[in-house]
Amino acid sequence: MSNNSNRLEMVEYAAIVGTIAGAVVAVFSGKIIYLAVPLSASVVLNLVNRRRFELVSRNNTNTVITRLYRQLAADIQTLQAVTRTLASGGEANYLGMVRQTAQMQEFIASLLGAKMNPIHQEIGELKEQYNSLQDSLSSVVQYLNGTSLAPRLDNLEETVKQYSEKMGDISLPPEQWLIAQIEDLKQQIKELQFQGAKADKRKQRIAEYSQIESWLTSKLDELKRQVQEIQQTLGIESPKSQKTSGNVSYREPQLPFTSLGTQTFHPLSAITSTSQPLTSSIPVPKWDCVHTLAAHSDWVSAVVFAADTDKIASGSFDCGIKVWNYQTGELIRVISENAGAVYALAFSDTHNLLVQGGSEQNIKLWEIETGALVEICKEHNGSVRGIAVSSNGQILASGSYDGTIKLWDLETAKEIKALTKHSGTVSAIAFSPDGQILASGGGDGIVKLWHWNTGQLLHSLSGDLGIISGIAFHPTEPILVSASSDRTIKLWDLGTRDRIYTFIGHTGGVSSVCFSPDGKILFSASVDGFIIIWNLTTGEQLTTLTFEPTQAIVSMALSKNGQTLAAGSVNGTLKIWQLNSVT
Image (tube, rainbow, N blue to C red; front, side):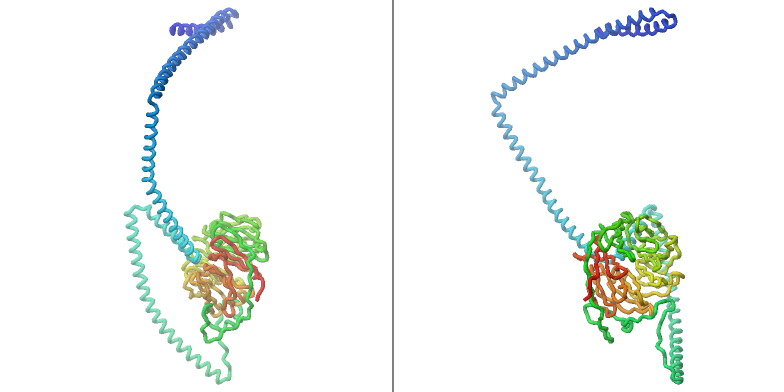
């Protein structure tokens, strides 16, 4: 049958070929008969093959159906036989299966109990460990919130730097690493030996200088006696000697407390001094909290008021910068949500700019009205911790973790000069009201006074045991205030370069300080969660402000008119107070 099918298909193919050949002959000869005969044969053969294929397919289908029917009949007979068997003894088999199922369930339950009990115990232990861990984390957070901002940032950046250096060392082969360590130790020994020799020479020079100083002092005393004798002989009164600084352009201080000398004030104890403290003539101010804003999702590390407007800007470790209306509490504009961790902000009202310093080792200039990024100043090698704009709005000063101070022309955004006398991080910086003097402080605990235009270091004010975290100039007198992580606030007389007062009242590092516009009141904010308002004349506390619940305060600013106070905390809250009245 198969052979016949194959033959018919071959004949059909031959007819097709003949048809093609006949078509060619018909074209050349012009006789249609050569095409009609083979084409007719092809059509007939095709019809025969189709009919034969249908018959074969039908036979095959019938065969398969018959086979399936027989298989199904056999399966039905087998099922009927099994059913008859179950009808005679099926109940007993069913009960046996039920008992076996019950036994199996009991076995599985006991097995699960044996396995699950230890798991439940472990889950209980894990819950206890989790609760303990949560308590520990809470304690750590409370501790960190009670720590001053400046040392935390320094420690973090120093740790990152150390890890980066160690990761760089790991790429070296062990032999080279050991050799490098040995060479480093040798170099350190040589430096120590050299420093020891220098120390011996220094001691010798100090002894020589002491002798010279003693000789000069004796000669000076002798000259003073001679001058006094001559004045007495001529009947001339001796004028009071005053120590003044030719580099400081302020007039000599006229505030009453300049006659008290150096004193230490503590709110919990009386002032022990031979001089009687002056009575306070300043009424107690009353500040009302008008807005509590959920400004950021992380520390509000910087706040600053714009001059002659209702705007205040806030910056945070969440990399966001926002501008608010402090009268209404309305969010005016989000300057940026990806500006890097913000450490410091300042307004340049002359150029309508908001200046930002932060973790990205640069200074960014933002346009206040549009939020557009105008310029990026890239000259520092560490995070920018402090910035200040001069009173004329033309000069920008920036202090960095790299220990340098850089001065910039805000018109061109170009660096003017760099000051490099600090031995640690520069975290606080401020211009004097006349714009001639620049004050800076930081990790070395020293406040330095500069003539920024010439780059001359005028003087260094030392005496702080902690990091300088805030600096402010008195608005009318040659007086400077510095805040420190050692929980103290110090007043400095820039004429005599002496420390006037040390205010003690905070239980945590002091993060910010500022004067009232009339110079009679001092504001200080601390990580202990309090803002203390001090009477600058007597050193007493007039009142205190705080967050509810108490949160570490890491930034503070006072409006230009002295009527509005703003502060930012570690939980991202920005709080605004208005001066209501005085009593």
